[in-house]
Amino acid sequence: MTITVSSAVASVTLTGIDSDDVYMLAVSNCIPVTNGQNGELRVTKSGTAQSDANYDFAFKGLRTDTTFSNLASVGSSKWTYPIGWSTSNTSAEAGVSGNAIIYLYNFNSSSEYSFITVETATKYSGGTLAPTGGALHKVASASDGVHFQWSSGNIDVGAVFTLYRVV
Amino acid sequence: MSEYGYIPEAPEQSFGNNKGIFTPKDIYDLTRADKYTNYGQLELIETQTVSNVATVDFTTLGTYNVHFMTFNDIHSATNNVLTNVRFYENEVLETGAVYQYAYQYGNVAGSFGESRSTSNTRIYTLMNLGNATNETANGYTYFYNLTDSSKYSFLTFHSMTINATPNGNMNFGSAVLPQASTVTGIQVLMQSGNITSGTISLYGIKEYS
Image 1 (cartoon, chains in turn red, orange):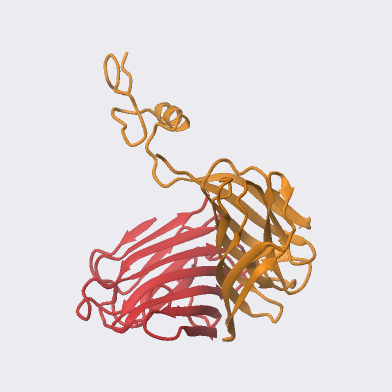
Image 2 (cartoon, each protein chain N blue to C red):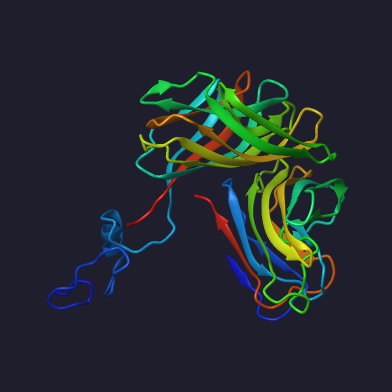
């Protein structure tokens, strides 16, 4: 499925994962209305975003302006950094956006955790940022999709989210 | 009798140049003849559902320049081992210390590092996983130039696993078999011991000229 943001919204939810296949989420032109925000991704179960403290992630923060960063957390209420990391808005920098390819594994499994691998390319005032790595939601039950929002403020017009099943 | 809606004959159909009205059978026939326009096709070559084996071989590669492999829910019999790949060249398994790889890794507890080799007997692709319940490996690998006898064979890979601690850990990197050869097969194996279970799928990325 594809969701194109036609007017600023607080969040985007994509569901429909109902098989044991690997899935892929492609995100392009995702921009925060409020300057300098991080992306926040959660799994959905029965269409509802889960906000429990079972999100772990490890991303290498590739960046053009300084030494790469280590971005890691255990027991968070969301996956931070997929799609955006301190991402500028268009008032700060025209042409900026958050973009990502995210593969989803084991989402449909009722007995395994939900895993993702993430490649992101985005920008802030200091340079280009590319959090790359993986994450998991440590709840052994089926997830049927993902929910995205910025750490604060809305998603600006023009963002495109497409969920594919790899068959 | 019309052909693709034209009477008496339709224009010649070719990839990127389809004209007319197409029935499902027309689309099927033209697709089989590589004459129907379908961009960006990922073509499934083979899926193997693994159950307690030491190695998994994919020996049908087709003629693609780029291959894509997914690893889903891989479980290991042995604790704390990495998932590896090595190649068959002209049906002979390359087991020499000739593979090169480099990857960045990191775990959710905040430990990050680099791993590299210029002379290994296999390519370490997916990060290490434990052998307890829910400790699985998941990821993907792209392969380049496998079927080109004049080129080295390259790969890029990216994974997320749960190790023996248990902590989530990730890696991403690339590798090469620096031998100009025709790769005729891909072997997947654990660093030691059996692959207990999992699903591995190999795709070809179709291109058109």
